Length: 414
Image 1 (tube, rainbow, N blue to C red):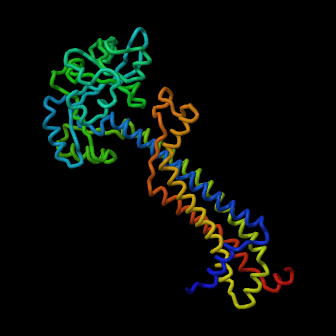
Image 2: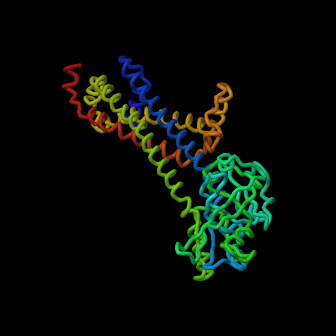
Image 3: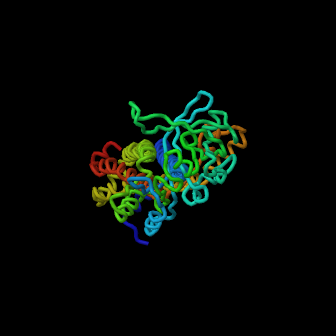
């Protein structure tokens, strides 16, 4: 099969056993270093994707994707929900009320965000029912002022089912200060644990109890909570729904309450990816040192090729092919091993924990008790492309130097 001369010789140089074993060793270490860099990038970014997926499913499974609220409390939330459900991006719509306050128990206090919900419909938009560790969500009954609290709150106060604590909420009044605290005794009827900061900052009560605390009618609610097919489209979807309802309604979504958390996670992934890319760059540019030594070692060969008619461009191509082969092999090996490691990292960590008897991620310290991993093929493609491009760029200067060698000078001192 016909092959260009430059590619044929470059491939032969890659396979040939050199007289200088040190050059072969440097070439091999460059290949191994490039492969390890690619492997590390794929595994680390996959683990970060896994953490982001876990945080998204837990945090955004608890907080509203979007809410549609009126200027005043909604007397009848069903028409608003029906209008929202006409949008194909909306999965479910349920009544929702939200308050900020303080929990007090035996002199200890903690800020809390109270969600007034309908226990019968909350499972349509929230994962809380799947994460109840004590009691159940259906224990929230109107008029009984039951509360479902997070696991961290329960442990901080030493609470269990049947204990009572006090909720303090601000209330507008005609007093000189304009705001007076209102206290309500609550009965703990359930404890949830989602493994996120919400375990310490969120609690649920029945929406009728929330309405009574706000001096509303029992059927009044603050807003309609929406669950969306694509939660990242929440601002556009909620704005479109409000535009159809009129000026007396306003929209809110998770990007206002939790957006900073996920922006920080995205920035962290970007910065760690850039730092790991530097490892790949160092390994790729080791190819420069390898090829420079190869050029010095092959000076006589270059001179002979030039004297029999090889052009400088062909000489340059020979060494670019040799360096590119090193980069391709290192990148592909690292990519394959990285994919295998990313797909099995959770199992490998579990095996290490079983063998050593030590838990790397304990549920008492971390919100996530295992090492999640989510392989995204676009990350693999991006990482391998970056490795190949840097490997190719690293061949240009040594190959250019080889093309500049004068045959007479090389043969004189060979």
